[in-house]
Length: 408
Image 1 (cartoon, rainbow, N blue to C red):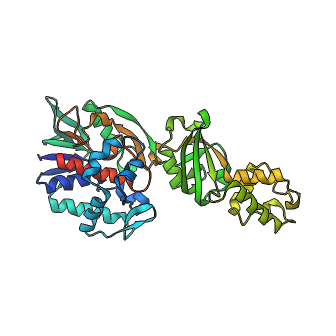
Image 2: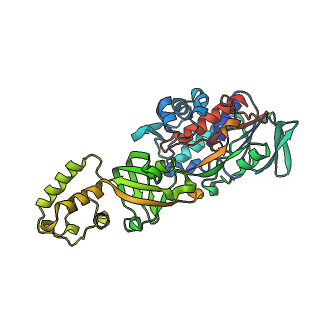
Image 3: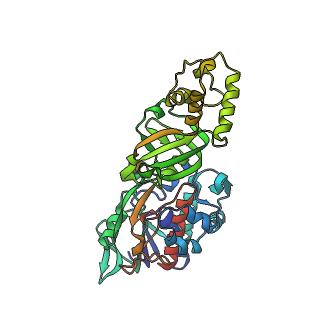
């Protein structure tokens, strides 16, 4: 079976590229090793699918910590509004939530997958459920693929297989293997947007506690360099910390040297140290005869009270009227900078996206075609580009998929 173009991987990038190429009149064969398309897409955003972020180019690139300049051409071809227009034209009403994150009104990722499936069907894309074993490269040009021991010929081939996160959805690193066969360099894959394990056992004590409107800072060991600082939400787990703030922080951390980072959580970012001290004094004046462990209910979640008291070096049995000024200031300092030490990142299989992939220096940014092998293209997470949470990673997938689809 031959076609004008072959696409490997029916995720966000592959499906979007398939629709784009087919609508331009190309015959498209889409290979997917799973028994259904869009498996990972169907579970993104806890099944709600944060498909893009309704923002401008500067905001997009500011949320991409690695190789943002490589994506300028792709974004000029396909901005968030273009993605929104596409899905609404396919019958999926959208809504914009806090942080300009875009979701289907139905809160169902299945609607996004169904829209892509229908658009591909309408455009005549043929889907083959088979794993691609290798590329066909003749005289230095990519001419097709071999899948299930059968050769399929095409004028162009797009690798859009994703990375290595969530391997149960099919992201097993196949794209790296195929890219290496073509002579491409792979920037070592590592987890991004991943929870963090801590040395301290305190998070286990607070397991399930979600914090809102706190500021998380990440410092590296060498020189106390502040590598991340942002306000938002986070969560304590049985192994450490998770939640939106932590996932975003992980995107700027080196997974291989995770142990060199320490965290600082400001539980009251709206208050200065002086304002917080006045607040503590006011609360204490109403509870002079209580012990410290029973006097912080207005200030902290109950499960966090013993942890903060301990971190401040105080006893929960200390009577409020016996607390010295330096002890009260120590309590306030701990509330403004509760410390934790990173032990490791969780395994890459738990990461939302993969950092690393095909080196962008070996890909033409205006077309997504390989600089090494004519007729070979790349799109999506298989490339060494990744972003913070908020819909930016799917926007990268759609934009690179669209750009490749235009040029296949």
